[in-house]
Length: 319
Image (tube, rainbow, N blue to C red):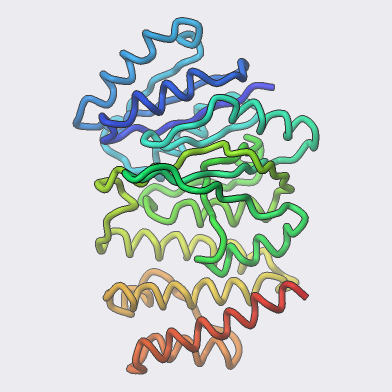
């Protein structure tokens, strides 16, 4: 079973050697490595070539591509998917790294279960050290997992730390949109889970770096806000056109209301959400919450009301 390891590269001169070394040192053999240079302006690519030369047994499995101009993470990840030829793909950010048996363990679970997606545990890495393992959400609660993900900010929607069958992308039409370079994980994983079954292992398979404070996820800007709302719009449109039984309507509305909450919390104008999200609440509860978050209600009051309503809903999922 061939697995494609997909790595976007930009601005990671300090971290790419550690990342690439961990990938080339995997115990699993049937791999292809696809790196895409998003026109990085530092020595990231020179370092990557140096590391590749030190791994002759892997060199023939490596493809290094370059975008014609800086395109952003959404475009670059989609290009990686389009270039992949493996049965499964796994995403690795180029400032992160894997333990040696990560892909071997994930692949074994994929073979054992036939699952279209396999998740493992992960640990954060800070200047202070490595954190405790964070376990994947149990696969026996698939419908609940997707509902919690739709709500936002409850369970992880990460694209990394998983194996994903490549046909989930090629046969469902789920693609990353250029210009969505923040919250792209949310826009992709919710749609993939709609089509997918899933299995999990408790082994740590990913080390997520929080050392790189200049990375895209450590900054906030109007560009981030727009990207976030565009990602939410992708999810809203997808489930609105497919969820005829309204199984996901309530968590979807909690997610879209959370988008309004995040826009107000970060100081951006509610008109930005009106422009890009186009969410129209259904029902008294969501009409009231949306009005509170869009209007002059003190944020602390609106936030408390939203979190209380969401907590009641989450508790109801456990019954």
